[in-house]
Image 1 (cartoon, helix red, strand yellow):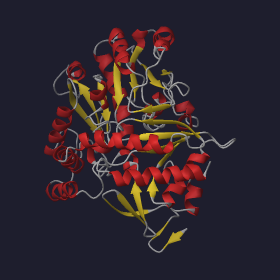
Image 2 (cartoon, rainbow, N blue to C red; image 1 turned 45 degrees about the vertical axis):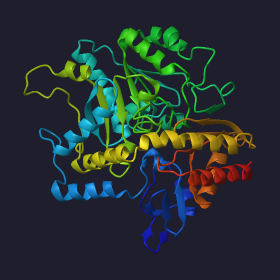
Image 3 (cartoon, rainbow, N blue to C red; image 1 turned 180 degrees about the vertical axis):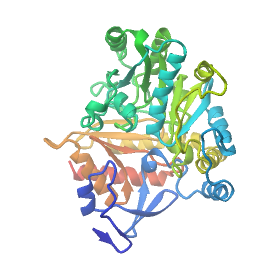
Image 4 (cartoon, one colour; image 1 turned 180 degrees about the horizontal axis):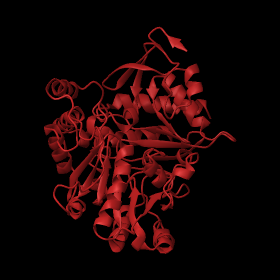
Length: 442
């Protein structure tokens, strides 16, 4: 298919039904503030921060100017055996935001790479301590940790795993999915209080099965993001920290989505008062403008590997673009912007407004079976069309797009997670458009 300015014959779109897309192209050519401009000249509100990335809104001049200055100064330098000044500054800024003694930053380019990096750090750390037999990982059902083979293995979204089975890591188990659709279908800015312990299976079945002494790490999203914004039970993450401490298991928080303000705090670790051993980040660290990700590690992990002759590499891992100077310049400018405009606090404030609007307008609509809001994000869950799982949500996503609002379909969920600069009028537009579409497709 062709358009006056481009052909669609060559790009294979990721996580997209390509045949349907060719019949109904959705192509952005410009963006500013809260809005995109499409190839056919329409305005579409960015209701999902462009996949959780664009927290400060589009076309922020302080970030683009920092990128231009960096390109004119140092465009690129290898990350191996040398480094660049912006990488050190960005690492210092990120570490200063992270809680506890999470002080050592390993840069990469994406959340997927961050997941695989954190798993490799876990294996190397245990081996350096003389416990190389610790090589089992525990993830969680319906979790998303990117699309690398490591991240897919600990991830728990069936569609992301089913055709790659033989290549997944062999020694991986999964916690149960921590959502109660009967007693806690509706969550509004609070932690659901369960009558049972959702981690009892970890202590009574999973760890005894493998023996805790063989487990390297447990990796979780503090809030399950990609599967549809599922909020953990009250005390869940603190209990998980206690179990890991008891057995010498590392705890990894995948904060690619929750990191940098989405819950009104720098990280979900701050919101829940739990310090993990590693914290994975990406997305909002550069406002989505440049690819950058990383893992923040506690000091003890780094220190344990600083052994052997000084001329020998301690950790054989890295990427060509680790700590890319232009990406790091974008990160520094982005973090400055978050501080100058107090955007984390704004996300917390506007999150209350978004939650109020979603619960007021969407609860009780036909086909709605659940609604979960926390921080500046919310998801409405729908009943499936018989024999066509996910189709109702996908049809609503398409309809909302044509009505000028970009929402995200995730299975049977529709998710809203706007930039932190969102105004009440934007929220009203997004929620009313979504409500009308849900009614239309009931």
